[in-house]
Amino acid sequence: MEKLIEFFLHHSLSTILIVPLFAAVIIAFLPNKESVCGIVSLIFSLDILLDVLVVIFSKFDPNLTALQYVENYRWFGDTIRIKLACDGLSISMVLLMAISLPVTIIASQPIAKNKPKLYYSMLMILTTSVLGVFLAQDLFLFFLFWELELAPMYFLIAIWGGPNKDYAALKFLIYTFTAGVCMFAAVLLLFFSSGANTFDMEVLTRYGSNLPHHFQLICFLLFFVCFIIKLPSFPFHTWLPDAHVEAPTPVSMLLAGILLKMGGYGIYRICVGFFPHVLSELALWIAILAAVNIIGAAVACLVQDDMKRIIAYSSVSHMGFVLLGVASLTPAGFSGGIFQMFSHGLISAALFMLVGTLYERTHTRQISDYGGMTKYMPKCFYLFTLATMANLALPALSGFVGESLVFYGAFSSELFKQFPTKLYFNFGQICVLFSALGVILTAGYMLWLLQRVFMGPENTKWSKLTDLRTSEIVVLGSLLALVVVWGVYPVSLSNLYEPSSSALVEFAKKATSSL
Image (tube, rainbow, N blue to C red; front, side):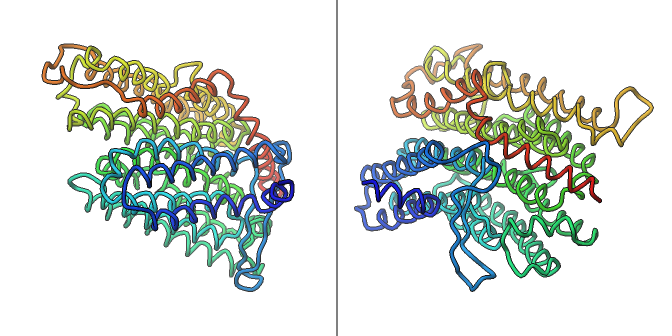
């Protein structure tokens, strides 16, 4: 037993990647019954969660900013290697994926009755690709995992989606494939211009800031466009509402809960880690882009009648805080952006689950079709209220922590002081103050949504609806319990990644000041 544990600790990251692939193969040979495939998938997902927790609580030291659990295997000679490693930033995203997967599988029961073997196999392949993005330390391997995610997500939308699923799936594929083309061009340009003869991200980090400025700028913009397409950000955000509306509820939970975070992670890991000087030059423009996302998407939420579109545009708005935190180049801003990604992953998954439970019973997502649902579905109302309060950043819930840290870090950023105005505030601080209106708008559209669906005149045609099932309560209770825990005691999460994010800020500042 001791040898088995020791073997796992030496090959823990590759094990975490192999388990879902192994699960996909096993599921392919199971009887084509949802109950069998669902139970096996849930067992494997819980095993992944257990493996991640063992990694975090055994030998992982959050105070150590260097890469840990390093696995480095030859693949194509010494140039392209299978190098896996984690630090606080990557392991926090891996933890989010490990938490999201079991609840998504539990929520999949009504959807997966159609072709269950294919459905759960696609979920497991998707899991490997997402985890691979967060654990890869070879840039070519990072790109391969990034592209691998396209195929399972395309089929999950195209096969199990709504009436316009073909359009939504194709639009998702076009946007994300374009993002992959940008990344591939940037990877090759960085590889050949650096002369390092390796795709090792740890090595390329040292070369990136020493390249000629025009090479840095081109590479940064290619990577940045790729990542904000996935995030998503204006003007590349239009694929997300369509994908969410047509995707089945569990797929929307994963899409908003973890796949969007690949874009945020890429900005932190590559754009900041490789090209800090370019980031500092473009900080104000990134802050403006963040403000446009936060306010523009929040305004769009106010005019929607489809509940899923409101949550989808809300995701665009909340991901703007990640951009604002990055633009600040401060420890608080970086920490807030990462916390925002984690918190939004839980809250958005809960909201999409709640919308899905209503749609399953009523077969409509139009807000105008509802009214007075509290009387018929009181449990759904209580949990919807809690998720709403978390989404509008009520104190003592996790949504408040990330946004407040981002605002503090961005408003106090020294970087923005190089953009003075004749007013008391500089341009960067004006962007922060403008972005703060997003909090008010979020409260407006979320409370209005809650009021129109659950309060007001009762729609008697829903009088025979059943309230939440036990499985739905388990999913929502798990997600929202973590929202409360990390809202009341955020340091239990921030301690995991904060040393790594602070070290990234220090590295960026040193690289910038030396030029």
